[in-house]
Image (cartoon, rainbow, N blue to C red; front, side, top):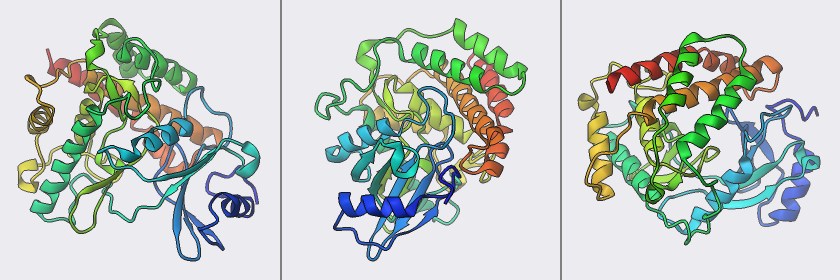
Length: 346
């Protein structure tokens, strides 16, 4: 079996490791690759009586500090006793000799997810519930005591937005395949307008907060698992708020995964202001957070991420090459939306 192909696993080696690490979970094991995990390929492992989830780094040459499944494993392990629901982490393997790349095994949770934020299969009352849950758990996340969960060392010191802007500017340059003028203009504006940050505002942030990274109970619609922690760190909570609003502004459909042009009230989905007001109430904030920089920044960061996805597809290392190329076409769109969001606050 060719272990370099992103949709394949060396199930023989993996079976041996599972027998050693998790003897209570019995094979024989079969696997299917999920449609999620464009950055880090994700697989459902099905054994004799149980299911597990494997998440791995992609094969090939990777950008520095990208695909940090080790950080995902660390943060989800730390949150197991918090009021932010995450799957149980079973083990992390950092040895390339096992299946070709580092990976971790975690609990399989039988919940429901929504690629489309309209969640059209639900009633309005159910849809209202999932969005209330989404906002509540986000507020919980931003109020976690880092010392209690042993995550004081989870992020570097210094201004979060300055660090993130520097990191993703480098990542974008290293994966750039063409000159995109709106992206260049957005980068220029962000570099000139990085806000100051109070140490008291710093908290654990998810980094990619949106509904398709969440799992909900199939009956009562409680939020039962927050997934995809690759971008998590200690930082500014405004980034997560802006990430949510940014995603809602995208076109509807499986690719855009947004709410652009939708009359949200008819679907019991909160408007941006309602979302921010509820979040602020749950956190006992006196004012709604200012997203003047955070929103353009989130458009920029997503554009940089998608450029990396496109570059991996062109290099033959993408988890889903065809989908990756389509996602890469959104780089220009995110850059333009980022510039529009700057004008919005003028």
